[in-house]
Image (cartoon, rainbow, N blue to C red; front, side, top):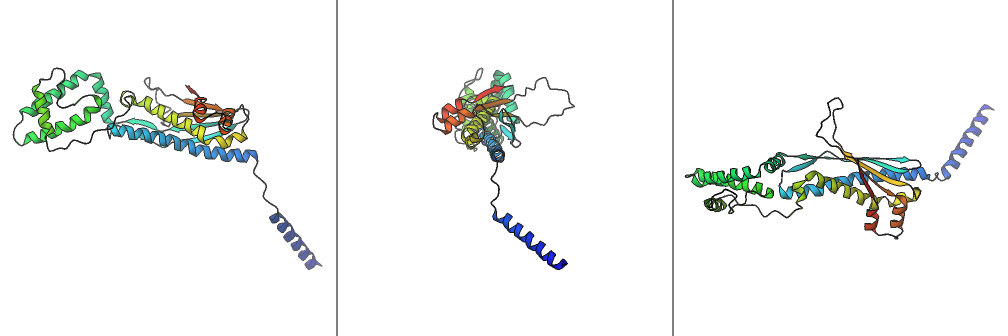
Length: 284
């Protein structure tokens, strides 16, 4: 009797397992689908920041190879806020300034002094004789090439207070054994005047493009009045116990666009440029 009951129980369990296997898996809920879209958007926003920083870095290096570097990785975290929409917190790599950029700052503070210093160096090179002259000319030529992006070091042109004879010294330096590199490509003057502003604008533009181009699948899971919001801030790790730096200004840029505007772009009622214009930008 016991053996028969065991067989019946095993058969019942097998039948239940077979029936469960035959039933299709439950379809993902709207929350599951939205959660998946948020996950995909996190990666897209992080890659957008990295791409924008890399493009700007290439322009900096075209001016001066060792001027600046972008340090750290970008990271993004997304959250669904009921009644508001979707919010993303994006960490932006910090713009590190090299020694050559510090030189740029010093030159800004005393442009006349730097010009006169170069004139003195050219005079010393012109008066140098023997085997040391070629070495001195080569060193002067390298310095002039490095300072050209800053409006200095232009051989053959006498600066303020520079004797015309120094032009001959510059032409002599041009004939030195060091070959002058190819002409540097033209870049936006803002890169030299305010690199932090140029970097911020590049990152913000990259984030706007990522929002408009990659958030369209998310629209189906949001109410028309909901917002897609991205808050971007540098990823500098600060010592919370240290006194605040009075000269440090940390800004957070908040970008947001209504789901209705993204739906209009998705439906072809507005074009891409108009959708980008509808992204609201705030700085705090």
